[in-house]
Image (cartoon, rainbow, N blue to C red; front, side, top):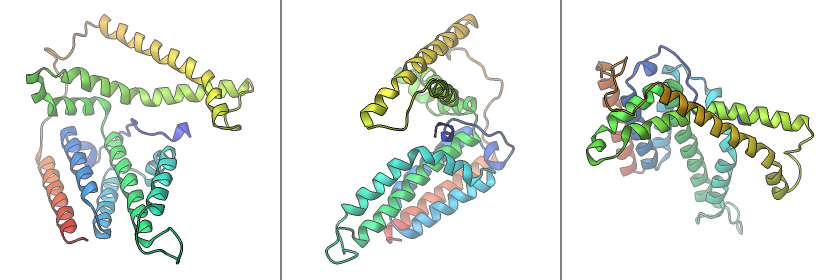
Length: 265
């Protein structure tokens, strides 16, 4: 299960999606999320599915990578679907049942919404390196520096968090394998027993995480790191014609979803 967590991973490539400016991809992700929550009908979700599939094809991202990353979220997806299925009023499927046709429709739409939301986030991290993502976020949030917001420090922490997600997952998998070899059982028993069985994992994991954080801090201080003041970049970000074209497609996409919502499509 831990190996299925792919958030924070970056798949290098030279596709159209990879070459987009990171600021463009971040803004388009925001537009995508807004459009996702504006969708209300099946035609809207069909358009969202088509757009997601198109980005996957252009970025050479396989569908199995997306589905693999969805496995840890399976419980939340199923639980949300069941809540909407049983608690949405409407016409019952069978007389006397609490399951309604409106509930089934809403549960399917909620599943699509959650899956597409996670897929869109994964597509951003799959096609954008953590450094480029950090630089893009910092440039987009740079106006907040005027009111004293520590933009560089915030984006740096976000970048390091994304960078160390795969590392911590790998470390957790190693600790669990070591504990299993000593007879630890993480699968059987009730909820309380399983929670107690996780203690031998959490303690060394926290120790390892704090040790890595301390080593990283020492490494940054030894290289005279003093935050973003006076910092230069080897690669300067510059918007190109392909970014303008992507922005235009994003605006048209959001407008189409809003029009579909207007006409309940």
